[in-house]
Length: 159
Image (tube, rainbow, N blue to C red):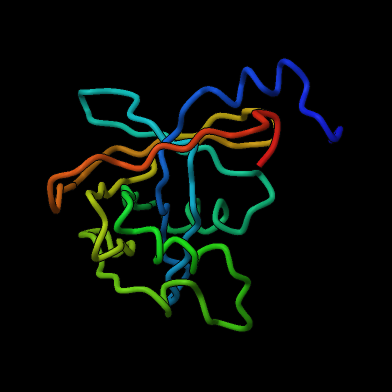
């Protein structure tokens, strides 16, 4: 990447995204990551999509579990989000460091999330360096009033 983002990178960086914890089960372990490429795709059946880097372990785990959950973050969730940026050894995961419970599918959700949706994997699409997974929403809840966190990138061509 150049030191200074290109005009295209700057323009793409102005497209706002939310901040979410996307999670699934990997055997008996809970696995999750901070995701920003998440959006609702359909009303009937309710469907959401999540773009996941094709080389991430999370993608293989979602394919295997065939379920995932999305915790919608707000400012109150900022401290918990930090746990998902750390690297862990062995079977330890970020969920060992945050309060969570399980959605009906068994996928973990943050206890203090603004809202959450639980999804059954319904398809995927190859999108270059990411795979977009689609999930039929099987359950969800808003836990309190508030606005979700919004994220803008300085460089829309990278993290």
